[in-house]
Length: 558
Image 1 (cartoon, one colour):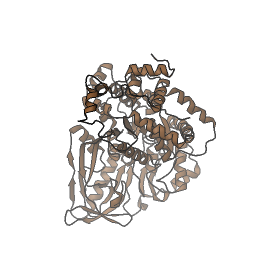
Image 2 (image 1 turned 90 degrees about the horizontal axis):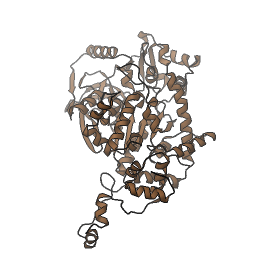
Image 3 (image 1 turned 90 degrees about the vertical axis):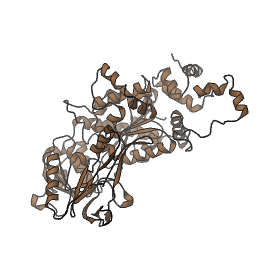
Image 4 (image 1 turned 30 degrees about the vertical axis):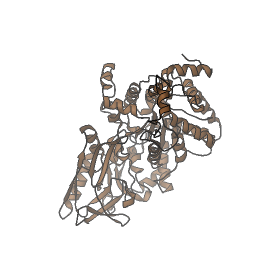
């Protein structure tokens, strides 16, 4: 039996999913399986340990959506995370801004944001990256905004496929108004009930012993053998490696002071690179704030730097370390020797905020930042070959885990300070993670039992709901080109006087025969508790047609 636990809260299929939990579990969720589930239109929570490939799966799914012409929104909980996926913050995209709790009167003012409402209406899929840092109240407010914009009161998020991405063992929500709650504690999460895809492949950590330490932190089972491995990497301040390794601090003041002092000690002339900016104020400000490269980048020969952009063709990715060895004679661009010994002339790169096919804001800067030191918060999402860390003053759950999981091997870790707090994880997250793993196991078994033909039909059904065919041809939204033939006398005559063609200008599916996939989706929507209006909206048919079809199928509707 196939799970389709998406925006319509399919209760009957939810029960079918739970039946699989009694069987034997043999294989963990893979990236390919998660992608297959996404392509069926199911709303998903995509999670896994640091380095398990969550962003890679999202990028593959985004490419699939683009190839089919399905409009989607790529968002994240923070500006930094948004720059990694070429998106915008969920706060900006949805129009909720900095709001959390809101009165009915305030919400009515919020929905007057025409741009936000238009963005929501146009989207079929919503991706929210780094959901661990999103407060529960914000997620619920976004969900409420989506329902209103989509004109649907019964479908979670107004019927959008929602892809929540993140790892709750990493940095938690930040709230300036007292205690915050995790996104999974929100009413929006409960309404959505996403399929959990818990990835188990590992693409960052290359050291089994080090990986066992990170896994032990997640399980709250750090033993003496794990502590011995980590404490063995503690160095005296005079023993820090001579090479220019980035230093991770928990506080901004430590980072800024170390970088400024290190640059000042270098001899020679400084070169300054200023960021070029273009776009409306709000998205531009968020883009600048989230960009890891600063607005004013000052470099000298000998400066320790980190690349802030992925460009494998040029020999670097986000997090690649190196040293400035000079400047290009023609364009004055910096030349960086990476740790692999490659010399790279670093040309400016662009960071974008995109809405569908439209670029709404862009900045251009040399994709570097000084790398003697960075904050743990800004290191989230970055992979490092080696780093020095001071974990003596970590103050937040997950901060130590994020820092440690940045490096690929234990040999690449150097510690100048360590506290017990570095191994702390939130107790609520540990319990929820156990449940997430169980849900993912059930999902893997349920989807794994499907034949290729059944999976293909599920994917096609989602494409139908999105208003596109399974073919790649078509316009920007996947509609086939040339469907209306002009100058055909017979077609024109048939449409004269209010024939089918005239009716279908307003109601494209009027009098169209029902397909097997549409019947299947009608049943699923009805079983999930959707009302007639919402079902009509999802299937692109009139309420009267829906009621008639429900009677024919033996379903009881209002």
